[in-house]
Length: 288
Image 1 (spheres, rainbow, N blue to C red):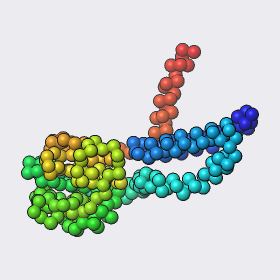
Image 2: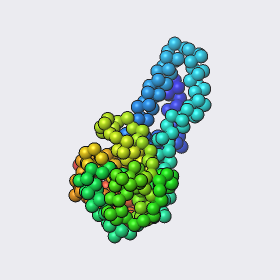
Image 3: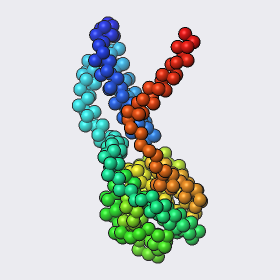
Image 4: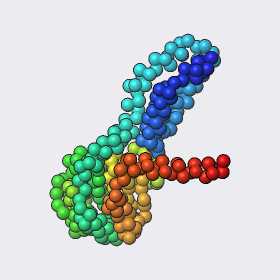
């Protein structure tokens, strides 16, 4: 009866309202995909759905009252439980404004930074000197830069090799290259990864820190293992291991120095989508 009443009272405004809410939930799902929050959210939904079914089948008034008042509790619990995911989502939304005031260095300077990093990584790998090099993109890394020793120097392979020489005071930590293409700090402390799905359970602190900074920001991190001398790179919470200098250069060019594509206005995209839909429907009309 309730379903029939809902269908009979369904208006165009209600349909639009339902679609907007569905789009909001669908958009929110992109921020938690591939994270441990998905498993936690799935468990909460299963528990709540089971409690609703039991309370309705057996007419449990106390349980039904508890479920009816659970929204207040969830309003407090959700920000606490999903704090990392909410922070990451807000940072992604905030990057839209950052893009309007992009601090990216010129293309020639980015190419030089990539070349110096690749040359330094090759020698660090041969010598088996551990290294952690962070490249800032749109997300600000000031809170991590402040934890290290300020340098504000040009990027060069010699400086990177000197920073990560085992007998220097700056080798134990990360060197952060800021958005203007200069080494902002060395010996900086990075957050460790919160992910449970690590590519290798034997990852050391240096690799966990490289994953961690790529999870809380859009920064790229180049890491050289002290034990094996292998080079890896992290981006967006993912790690690409066992790189040689040539592959490292290719990946850095794709991530840090991508080819610029002309921006397409929104109205042009809408027109392209409409033309594509029209072309797909045209054969069906001809057959009819």
